[in-house]
Amino acid sequence: MAKVGFVSLGCPKALVDSENILTQLKTEGYSVVNDYSNAELVIINTCGFIDSAITESLDAIGEAMLENGKVIVTGCLGAKSDLIQSKYPNLLGITGPHATLEVMNLVHKNLEKPAHNPYIDLLPAQGVKLTPKHYAYLKISEGCNNTCTFCIIPDMRGKLDSYSIDKVLIQAENLVKSGCKELLVISQDTSAYGVDLKYKTSFYNGRPIKTKMLDLCNELGRLGVWVRLHYVYPYPHVDNIIPLMAENKILPYLDIPFQHASTNILKAMKRPANVDNILERLKKWRQICPDLSIRSTFIVGFPGETEADFQELLDFLTEAQLEKVGCFKYSNVDGAKANELPNKVPEELKDDRYHRFMQHQLNISKNKLTNKIGKEIPVIVDEISKKYIIARTKYDAPEIDGLVYIKNNGKNNITVGNIVNAKIISSKNYDLFANLS
Ligand code: SF4
Image 1 (tube, rainbow, N blue to C red):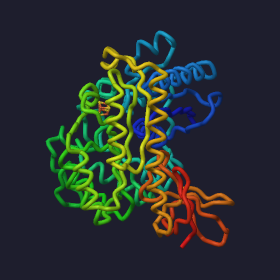
Image 2 (cartoon, helix red, strand yellow; image 1 turned 180 degrees about the horizontal axis):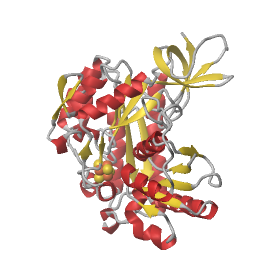
Image 3 (cartoon, protein in one colour; image 1 turned 135 degrees about the horizontal axis):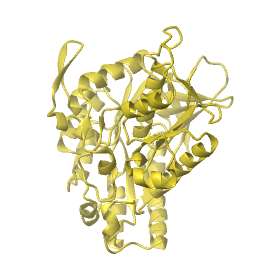
Image 4 (cartoon, rainbow, N blue to C red; image 1 turned 90 degrees about the horizontal axis):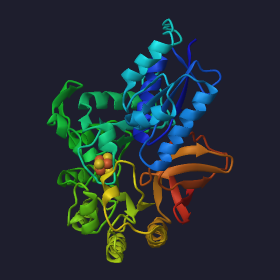
């Protein structure tokens, strides 16, 4: 059987591209192997977001060239084909991101297509997943219409290109049929879903449905699994999603990458939905859905960030009381407009602000977790070890948020993907400890 090696780097959006290519390879009867020496060619899905990711991708290409010598490069870094070609002139081909068809054309050119065998080539309904079976990323669009000055994703991935709602819902339904218990909705800008298609109406199960965020959430809410929204910008229409969370149709969780809170910095970043009244909105959302958990990421040390701007950010954290927060120190990204901004923040000051930020938020997170002690909450099981059943609450996304550790007494029938009730008994900085209830 024709054997293809595959290396997947980058963010969840790149992961979905990998899944699409792997699905297609398997559909056509190729076998996917883990080692270079056994493979007849190697595909590398690269990331080009920040300098360290570019280096990692270039290193992976170098390794594959050395070990195998027949390499196809795809993904975000593929948009910089000159850079790749100058280092590795003998590649079989280079494509940009979300290019399953072009990648498959390159595969066909270099490796004979296996004869189809319906007995061994049958795919499970959900295709090939790189995530565990009980949760899956559901990508609803490609690209982005925004122009954030620190980001080159729109240059790499192009303008917003939403998948029509019927296709997204069919994919979601297939995932659920194959045992998926949690859908993680992803895109560069989930709130903008359907804008490019003018909210086109499609038919799903014989019903007309608009390609629109609210309709998507309503429909996903009918599937009977956990539905979690990532990369949501607080455009006004997001207000309409909060009641669905209060009614338990989708999880009371919003991943909103605020990036900063100072008006000056947000302007310099050219962030979308840079609204003055965000604190008021958060308050209103929490009145409608008191259970709401908000995750966000922030950048400290953006060019021009003064001590007053940074203080504004800390004050925002105090006021907003966000449940989960991540922080990055600003660094230039090759090709980004922000590189030309004046008043760069010195590295030591970035470090100092990063640590002050993390400490400030740690106190907030600790408090939030302490308030959960004594409560009984449903958790989804991610992993089972001899000592612990490791799970997550509905307030925690996989990979990025906290965990719940439940002592495993071995006297239960719990398996990965089960949703069980746990009584919280204690908390640490970001994680909870619980007993089965
Ligand atoms: S919203 Fe901004 S940061 Fe996010 S992908 Fe679009 S341009 Fe980049």
